Length: 165
Image (cartoon, rainbow, N blue to C red):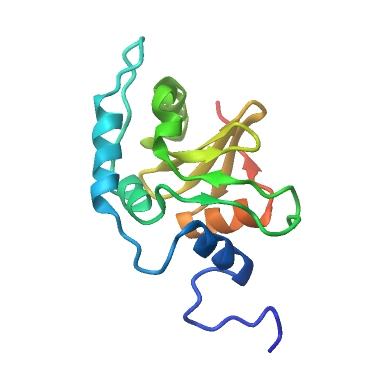
């Protein structure tokens, strides 16, 4: 079989699927109890300046399926070095102001999703399910949904820089 051949039952490209499974993901994974604990913790947090986290269905669903996974890339990356992704929204607990600024710029709610641990970047998701990365070099659009974003991060597909203002 050709290595690029994918059956219709495979949700992710083979290397991404393998990395997700090695991290503990499986089709049907759904830990809503943990997702609700994270939602409560984020809702209860207020920054010193009064900023609060947005919690919405797209974020809770992403946390329920992928939360708690630490996904390590398996290859060299297609365009850039792939990221090790730690899908724990509490990485963004103290980033309420930064996420509020991004929410205003995008005109939609944004919630933390996890971190790119190699680059100290924050990964966030918006109310439509789009995924972003924020780091010291700027804000980046990673993908239109969690699946494509995980594929991009783990495969080393270069994100698109956001221009705001």
